[in-house]
Image (cartoon, rainbow, N blue to C red):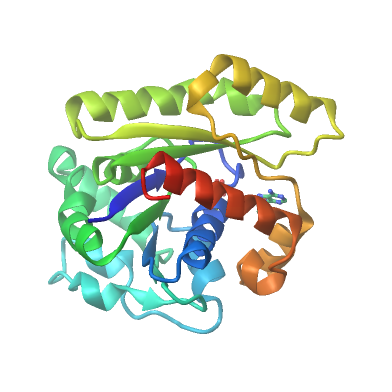
Length: 264
Ligand SMILES: Nc1ncnc2c1ncn2[C@@H]1O[C@H](COP(=O)(O)OP(=O)(O)OP(=O)(O)O)[C@@H](O)[C@H]1O
Ligand SMILES: [Mg+2]
């Protein structure tokens, strides 16, 4: 029986995609028997580019899975192997942004759409399902939270704005928990892009430690250009440079996640 985890924050560029993809690979490297699915719930399709790159041009994506105007595509068809053993991707495409207009017409039914299409299959076939989300508090993030057991919220240690916007995503998690999915739990805040040479990184780490005491990961992800270089090539950091600093921190993060969930 697996778990489904939303990676979300309404703030853009904080590392949601990078966390979903690299944590997935770190988990698979920790234990070769684990099966991990990354669901790209963002029509920007950045997770799809990192995980499938130029290797696979998928015919079936979130668009085919969720389009209410076409016969539904079976979920099995929408899942593709990545370059990493045990890691799979449910890709997205720009077209999916158009679906929002259709799905909004019947919004209260739509909130359960991803849960209904994904959850039973994901729990049976995968140990971990990580859902990457767009940088908005809106329909897609709500769909993801309704389908999930846990939420991880990455923040950017290089920006003072990361703390300001945080309240809104935490409120949405609480709202979904109270009205749509009582099983949902906020797992942890994850501080990304830490550069300990800078005052802002030290201040954000300190603020998170005091304000979120037990609700932040002990592990942080350092600012590391290997992440950007890997992304530029349509690769995860493990394909680009498995010994880079960020890869070592993702290894620690995978251990922390497994311990927290009683799977370590
Ligand atoms: N720890 C890091 N060190 C250096 N660069 C990073 C790190 N984490 C992410 N990046 C880079 O920062 C940029 C934003 O990261 P990413 O795309 O993962 O954020 P996001 O929250 O998914 O963005 P969006 O809101 O657009 O979906 C990317 O270019 C990524 O390669
Ligand atoms: Mg992203």
